[in-house]
Length: 370
Image (tube, rainbow, N blue to C red; front, side, top):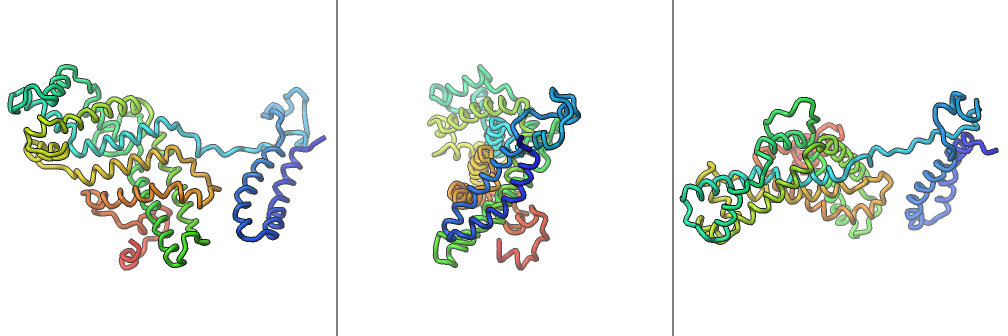
């Protein structure tokens, strides 16, 4: 009769010796290809050795159908790690869209639309039959946006801890979102900076010593960021992002209508937004920076939502998959530095060290690495 307990202990004890013997007989190029496969095979063997019989506390204390059994007759309690996968992708995708919407909120898009509606109603715009006038009429008549500014501000506070709106009593607020996001962007940027330095020094793109430590940092920060977003994006966030997202698309198309642009001597929708902000809203917001942060931030958050961050991932595969997002991270950081809150950014190297609990370097060192 098989003994699951002994089988499990034997596999766990002898596997490392087996791996050492097998890898020692292989040339380096074949060894790299086999390492990850052996790690996966080890997990399969452990699961198989643990036994397939149903097991629970009744069997352990003798209340099962076979009465009291020895430890050797019981299945080994092999626990499968599933924390990193226990998220709802649709919520994370909604959070990514909400981040895009938030940056357009900061660009005063919704305020500018309200100004246009007021000017149109008061007859202070010389438009009457064009596509822009038609859109303003429809927006005023049907009022398609049911989620008010207060609703949106509460959503930003819950999911990102942005803004000053009071969080609803009992709601989960993602307190560390911004710190996690900046740290993840910095880790992505640092990873590809290290790769670039390594390739230049060695004169080859196929380098042997890749920055495994930075890869582990990306994985850890990505899992933390994803988990925190999943906890805070329940409730009406999915519905809100769908509705506000369609409304935002309509507003951006409105700003690009020829009769609207002609009223403000604008060439593009962004010129229209800037002119409205300067004339009626106390000045234009950080349009260029916020547009890039919205684009790159949303793209990376969507990637994080669909990335499993497997600890045993092949560094070469990860590098190929993540390279476009390294460029997005650098673009996000460059734009973030130019915003009011980003001017205190301490640099990529310092941020990564602080994120993993290491002491920050002195200013002279920071200047060299950042």
